[in-house]
Image (cartoon, rainbow, N blue to C red; front, side, top):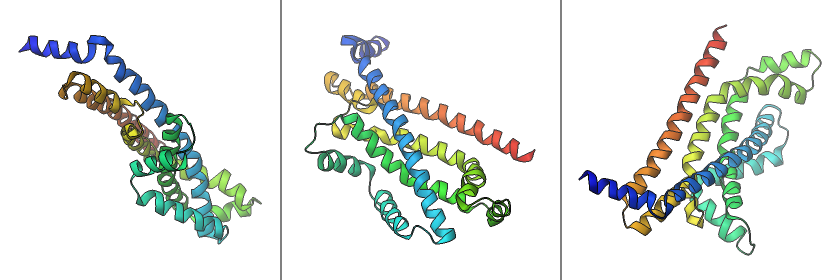
Length: 231
């Protein structure tokens, strides 16, 4: 039985360097996740500021209207459908790198969730902070940047880190547009060896290890923030 298992390991990962499908796929997964997170953070913060400003001052009515539509559509449809629409419809007639398409799709999807997380953090800050900024001679924008956003960011940092973990797992659907991500790499091995168990278990274990590592980092972050709050 051990000999059969070792032979399966050899056929699935060693023969013809099939392990490279997993490593190459992992690299693509990490690249997509990293740059999608950057897009999600930047766009999400902008949307959150627009919506929070409208809620507090009534400004940006038109921008807030479009932001609400964007959030409703993105949060109300599956990410895989968004990925397919962006690739086959938006860029259907353009020769574009598929990884860039995935980065854009997952970034736009993540931005919707980041926006609501950050907005909730901004709205949780007491209005007295705005009044304090005004008494110091700061404008609304200066108060938002110098006083409100740093506090809001600290409050929602664990939630933002968890969004990063969710996004990492969501990229597993990149194979729908023929990107060789981690999941697709395992599926390629399966298609060549006709053995599903080991390749897919390997993919699952790699995701599990990454998620456990990131979860541990988030837990440490939450503890450190809690300690700082007690001081």
